[in-house]
Image 1 (spheres, helix red, strand yellow):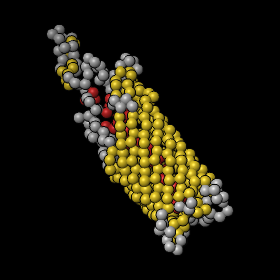
Image 2: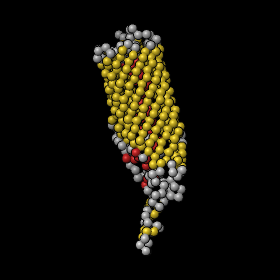
Image 3: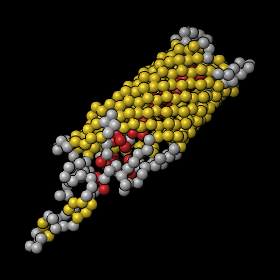
Image 4: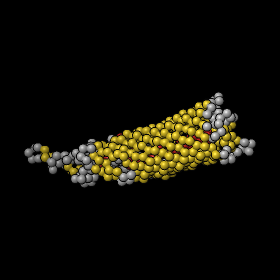
Length: 373
């Protein structure tokens, strides 16, 4: 009777069972006379070792994926705003009154239309015992935007996102595939200030599997629907002093994701486990400083340091005998990058790392190409 399943209707998640056989009067092993013990801890409610990957990883993956998408869009807007020292079609300059103006570099077409493509990946590792997993988030975005007058920019981005995790806490795997649509806009204000905003919607599905702790039976659930809405709003300040650009950003990012209910199915016994739908929210305040300088005419290295504070997020409940995972609300992001420009074309590469979250490691890179008309 030792090898029971946590989902077996005859044994369930509570009660007791015979842990081993005992010796009968004739000295042979007999069931029913051995010691009794409580059910294995891993079968208790909310224990992550028998929980679906989608339930345990929801908040972390939502935070990383949304920040990646919103960050790609914000970076696109920042290039329009900050590259006065590089020969690209867009630049921001201060007049004698301190007012910022959005303009075009000489020799480029003045239609004010930009087409861009970006690719980004983030690697993340959760080292908490109850929620240990690792994997990557991949995002690709394509966008087109147009300047409105001298101070406005409006655009639309479309993209694809994939998350792929190895979930050690339940000996399984978790994978999502999403399509993204996100309009965005920016407005240049006086004295080097500007505001930008983006909203977005993703639609997709997820697949997952895990091994039942008692029997090692594989449970799977595939093609479950999910959707997400998100929005960001940022206030920016920028200044150019000779060959150096520097500035700061204060913003907020909010996202909400819904994952449909699903049924896990055992590979050998065809046992089923019903799992309810799930809503997850993450809200962040973001603040940081950035700086860059011009090397020659077409090279612009830069760096950013940002604080990220989670002012709201859905908390995970683990089993009664499991240590709750760390929930640090404040993180620091460090980013370095370089812009390489030619007439009408600009390429960028940047890398980042996230620090100050206990039992959490995250780093990634982004590459982008922009063509202006």
